[in-house]
Amino acid sequence: MNNQKCSPLLQKPRGRARIIQCIYVVGFMDLFGVSMIIPLLSHHVKALGASPTVAGIVGSTYGILQLFSSTIVGSWSDVVGRRYSLLTCLLLSALGYGLLGMSTSITLFVLARIPVGLFKHSLSICRALLSDLVSETERPLVMGHFNAASSVGFILGPVVGGYLTEHEGGFYTSSFTCAVIFLTNAGLVWMLPWSETLILHDNDSSNDTSKVCHDNNCSKSVRNGSRANSHHPVSAAETDPGTRAPGTHRGGLGWREVSLLQPAWRQLSSVGSKIYMVASSDMWDLFLMRLLMAIAIMLYHSNFSLAMEERFSLKPKVTGYLISYSSTLGALAGLLVGPVTQLYGKNMPALLLHSTVLTCSLIFLYAAAPSVWQVLLTATFFTMSTTIGRTCITDLELHRGGAQASGTLIGAGQSVTAVGRILAPLLSGLAQEFSPCGPPSLGAVLALAAVGLMLIRIPKWDRKGMTKESQALSD
Image (cartoon, rainbow, N blue to C red; front, side):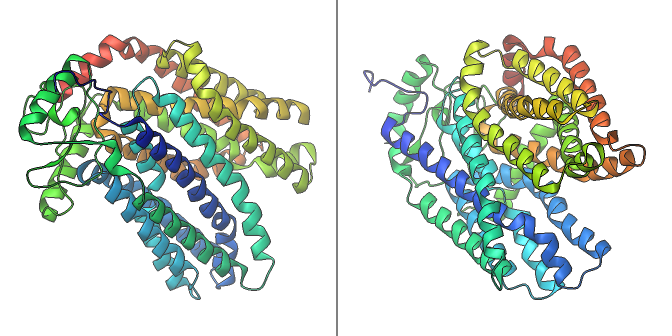
């Protein structure tokens, strides 16, 4: 055992690579299926006889459920493991979309949206799993590739959904197709080579392994949710000799691994403990930064089609081409995240600051654009800056909070973004009362506030400070 070489995860490289590639496929298929449905939901609920007010209330159900469930499900994935939590989310999402395919009334439509709103967190768990699988230096590159694969699915999905809708019963066909896609994803996740990513040790040998890993700074974990009584998969993090208390790991938020077969009260206790640790940590600046930028970006997109028509008399068809062009660049931008972070020497705070400044400038230029060509220019760089910015802020959250609580942290970030989805339409409506340029102008102000917040807080985000903070949280 003393001659054993330890990677950060005690993984077989081939097994790890296969899982990463399969997760890319899961991300692509996930947004491909969802984007088939999203453009059709408002039309379908109105076809069921809902008034505009009722349609708005029904439409907000999903966002409200996501707001409260994102952090809980993310934390639960830290507790029971990525495999079982991801399978649960995929299967229950498939159930929701299957019910949607049978929704012939408003009541059935609302019931179908409940399991989707509560458990459609498959992408968040995939990101947490990728964070478990790779080292900190590889994380931006892998996350960028995952975002690119997902974005391609989001671009292609509406094309297929629109084609199916042209036929009789097209919405129901699209819904059942989406359900089948999620079931396929669940089967793919079930067949992943989980056993190849961990090495089995008994209690005695795991102590030796932890020593070897500690000497080589191996501190991350991969947990597929399965355990045994005396012989179970363990990783470096689970046997870290820096552990201060049972279930608490150095270098991140404390956590306890609980088997899926453990009593529900114990799982709930662990979930509550992890959420409390995130809520009581000094990460308010990152979450506020995420909220400000989420609202700013949503305000940019909120009335884009209407603004193009009112400001430049563009036909919807031309505006659609412009949106497709922007979305395609957004997918390609995910491939640039790795090289850009290498260019910055892994200095994520500096990269986040520069991308935020660029995003703020582009929103302002769009709001003041005198011609369509300037809008095209801003759209070209806007998608790139926002894609890089989202990856940077996720990476910073994981770095400051610790990878052992990655599910909780990513879920909390999604909850913050859900707050932005609730506030952005309201702010957009108020700003449009003054001008078609009102929403992006307000977005530029919020992005500028985010820049100011970063300038104040970045001195506390240096690597030494973040390491000390993470260790303090784990003590």
